[in-house]
Image (cartoon, rainbow, N blue to C red):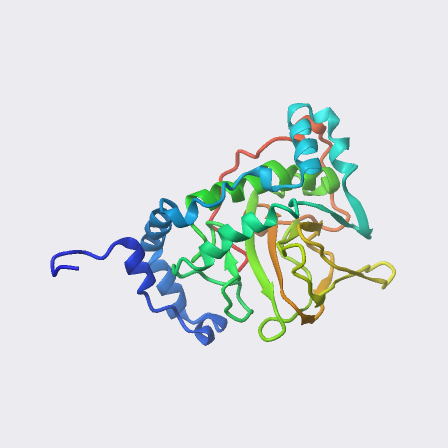
Length: 307
């Protein structure tokens, strides 16, 4: 570089000194300043990266999803009265918790190839608070500082949220309608020598969609997700298969048990209302029909982020 040349966005973003793990975990004010001061640089860097060869190896679209799910959802969008073909794919694996195949196991390798390139891009990203900083933990939604701002990824993220998650959530949990306009998401990675588990908790969401990103043959032991039935006290332990998903109200108590071997990578996606509003237990249920379920809200995305 000559003395008069300015480093490009990618070079400048890659040369930033990321806040320390300790500063991030204690949410030091300097961490917020880092993300605020560098927000435009990071957006520009992701745009530059998105135009590079590194991002073009995989086409991010719904062909990566399970074929039966894609066909059922496409049919329901064309004719909402056929939405039963979507609910037929859902299995109630625990009270109020439904499991189904989201990604095509044979296509996850392509998605992971893209994500590995994202994680190797060298552009600072913020992991979810409270976890060890590892290369697969990142914020996905634009309302989060340090999110994966690559335009191609964001287009795919909106497709998943608007075309798939929200109408499926409304179909299964009608009380969330109107409290599902806002999106939030992050990736999380479990391995025995870093993050191994999450203590019992509920989510600050109307509904949570948890999608596994493990490749076929990328096995792990442990790391079940235990769901607690508050009415009976029963606990149901569920495990993920490559590309499978679990969807449930955010107020369902659950915990991720320690992973004993291997690794587990997931997308965790939330819907909620403005200012973080979520359904109250036993609250009203909007009387809407299929045609209203299969719509995209017009309410704008706000700046509110749960964490």
